[in-house]
Image 1 (tube, chains in turn red, orange):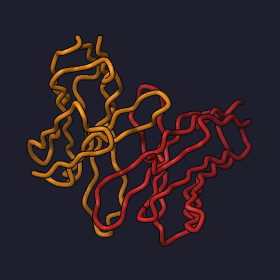
Image 2 (image 1 turned 180 degrees about the vertical axis):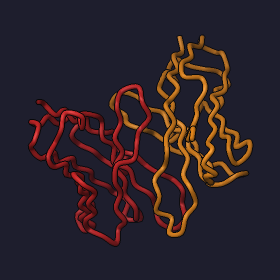
Image 3 (image 1 turned 60 degrees about the horizontal axis):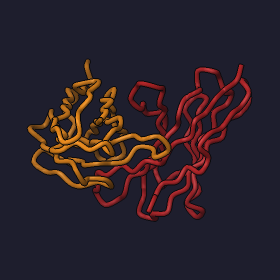
Image 4 (image 1 turned 90 degrees about the horizontal axis):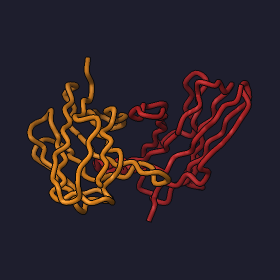
Length: 113
Length: 115
């Protein structure tokens, strides 16, 4: 049973436009959410995170939105750049001291020049 | 600053062979993780260690064992490799903070092929 779901395996956008990557979760005990970016043949690198007490967190071109009632989060990249082309993973951590980090299947973003 | 170091980077095994994937971090992190990445499956947690001396199963622990040798090192062992274990393996570590909202840092990965 997948607790973190990224239902779009791929997304293609034009350079300069907005990229929106979506993530849904089923476990209401998740209290911290992260986005990772992964290039081929490299390890994932942390991008941005959000605590469940917030509904938005912004870092430069990247903004994460959290809708707890819908158990949904999204990552917005504005403006998109060709260097943003990568696989993006959504991850979540359970409250209560668990150190488990659960990841989604990822969305491959392609930004076309 | 090396971060999380995994060895080896590539390995080919024959079915039934055993091997140990090594992972070391120099960031004094408490938690360490082993994930595998397969096409279309994302990153799946094999085992994790919340602190030195403790290990717990993740989503896909069958066929693997782990050892948290000390605070720095967390190894993953395949006792009898199977083709289904062909994958890219990632080790990660995460600090203990208050509040406990921190990211995990990943190694570069080990690409394992079992033939």
